[in-house]
Length: 180
Image (cartoon, rainbow, N blue to C red; front, side, top):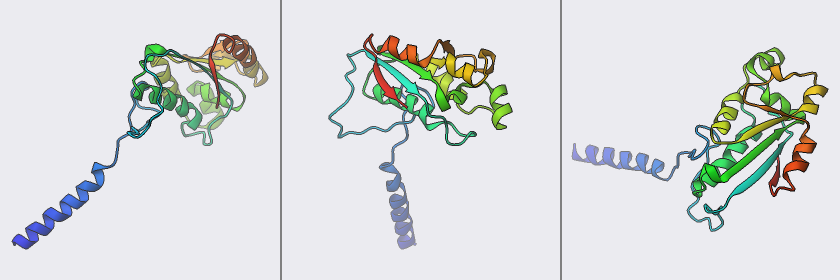
């Protein structure tokens, strides 16, 4: 009986030790999306005392229409990585300009459903990004080229004249340019 009990304790300890090294994803700035992990050995980290001005040029759409685009989620990851390093959302000034194949990620559910037969899985991510202070802009030229209207978009997105003019407006203002 004691041997059986000791074996059971050993198996339980072995089983639970497997989970002590596993980390749960963290979402410090964008809640529920863009999960990231602590890296205790990292020597290069964002400086929490700095202001971050970042312009993301998003042209790549999702691989699967019924799944969140990895590029939309990557915006959340970038925000959360800064948050993990202690950068508060007030110091993060992020603009995402969406055009090209990524334009479908900003469609409202009705237009997305018409095109792909499912609700837009990216809208909750965009909502969480906006809650974290991210401004999402869509290229008006891409809208026109694809015969889409503002009414086809989810409510949080703003329409820019073009991605080109948005980029040339914010880069001279000191925004770091990232291409997704």
